[in-house]
Amino acid sequence: MKIGIIGAGNIGGTLARRFATLGHEVVLANSRGPSTLEDFTREIGASAVTVEEAVRDRDVVVVTIPENAIPKLPRGLFDSARKDTVVIDTGNYYPQQRDGRLAAIEDGMTESAWVAQQLGRPVVKAFNNIYAQHLLEKGQPAGTPKRIALPIAGDDAAAKKTVMALVNELGFDAVDAGTLAGSWRQQPGSPVYGSDFDAAGVQDALGKAKRERTPEWKAK
Image (cartoon, rainbow, N blue to C red):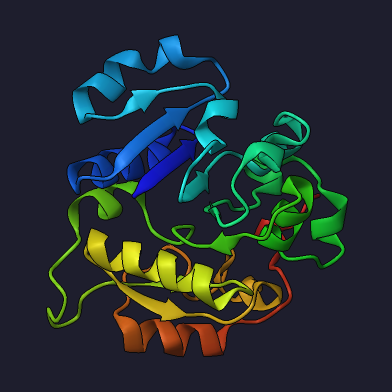
């Protein structure tokens, strides 16, 4: 599969490494340019590209940058992407810790719905609730008891199926967490956030989530 990744931080770099190891054709981009990624991509068997190149002719594009950097992406970035490209958003809104106040999210829009609006493309929310180190080290074969599961939210069934297959390849069970409008159930502060639950535990945690953000996850 041809996979583009925008963002080379903890999650982006880990996904690039894991997907390349699994034999996917991976290209990686960041805001500083390909030259800053060449050593890392050479090490993991991926290619360093520009942000614009990361979306062209890709089966999947992973957007894994801070929420406050989303509007800084090139305008019309996905105009050159294939119509069937699946876009994954791994992002979380950290108003006090990093992002500052984003009015639409503060007013109740889910993080990934906001990202989709900014990108002008539907997205699937995934990989936002797991620590990068666990994503790197804790994958297990399908059928392993208590295998860690990850929630996957989105509005397109075919796109979610693609993402869930990738999650399984990485060594985790995938749990359908419903639509993007309901993806608040996996946002920071929710029971599933930062957890290593199995599939049953993820389902239970999603069911216990509350829509209202706790003070720690609201802008001051």
